Length: 393
Image 1 (cartoon, rainbow, N blue to C red):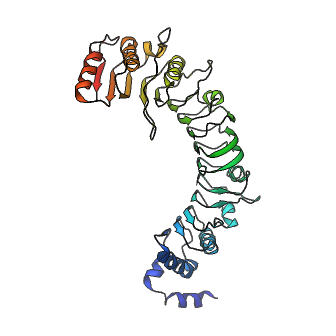
Image 2: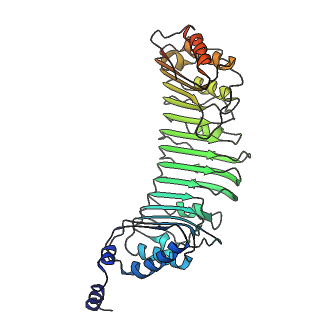
Image 3: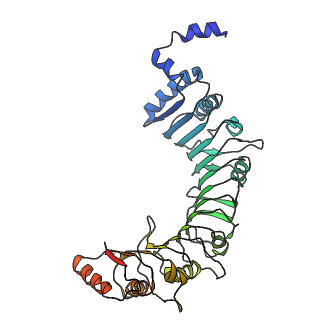
């Protein structure tokens, strides 16, 4: 069709559709099967008419979708042909029809952001190459084989932000994330998803979040991250030596783990530490981290999101006062305080030995009368810092 004839035909298209064909940002979804059918008809008819040279973003929210995989593939093909910069697809269907991504998506030179969530098959071809991709989110997607994740990662030379949430059920061989350019990594492995091992090599990383609900003992190698600033660690597996060794440059650390690590690590950059107290033996890990963090300024003993509160089973105070308590610790937050003997001993120990403590905040979960008695007891305890303010919340 020649250009003049196309323009004549286009001039007969309703104004609202003509406006649509120039929009650089497209977002579509449906709430039920009838909307799904209307959406299919609209996109099948009008998306091929799109005239914008660049589509900045194309978002599809297709939950319990009846849209055919062939149609969804075609929509993505058309978007990619317009120098697509961002693609987000949230998808589920019944019966399951996960093959909705066209092969040309994996060679899109313009794509900067790719976010996929749900029952989407990730079948990465051997010739995949995404030279501009900087952000990749893969949440509960279906991997064609054990090589699919590593194949897409190895063909994203400028990737900076990666988030991987594995599906609730399934298995994988060795989970390998080797991305020299990566700056932010979030990895979630649910309880019922099995992996044979974890290998992470990301030397440029500045933010690291790792949540492993599976408590099976498996191989875990996390290489040093010299530029790491912040880490959020929530793991159930028993051997955390390699993991801890990769975090020594961190400045902010939140951690929940039953496991201990051997000595020999020094966290001389660590300023802010949050230790989840949902584990019965968390005080052992606390003592170890206090000894190894000579410049610690703020300590938060509380539960991570969605974690249950557990009383501290025991408090064995260190044989010598950790250096951070003598030189740098300024803030202490203690949440879900019940006033048990172990909690009281821990709180009194910090008040008695933290020389530069400025603020101690106690968040209690007991009634007012008991709260007053606990406050009075702690207020009367001796303090190494004469300027320490005790706040009972």
